[in-house]
Length: 92
Image (cartoon, rainbow, N blue to C red; front, side, top):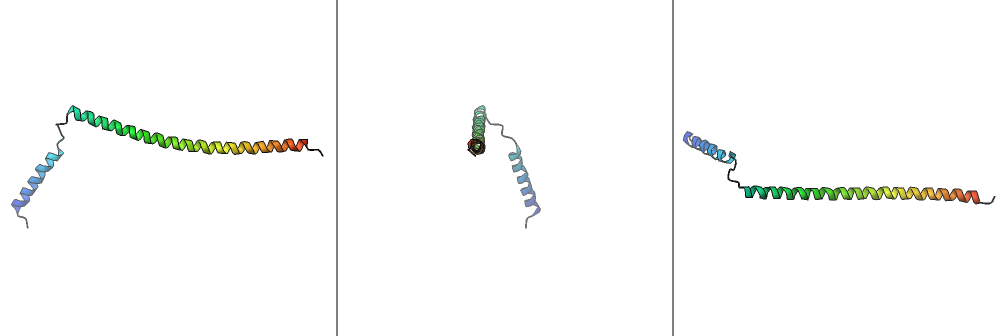
């Protein structure tokens, strides 16, 4: 078992070590700030590229689907018109 002295020493050590982790780092240089900003910009560009790729893919799919629908509808109407002309020109 722990004695009162050991518990007190342990609590004191934990308290002092946690304070050192809680303090912000003051020694970061301007050079490191520039590196961090560059990395953030690079990551943002990658994210934008991925989003653009996904949007282009989705848009391409939708365009293909819509074009296919329009083509089928046009072909249907063309057949319908051709049938009307054939019926009108057919001798009785």
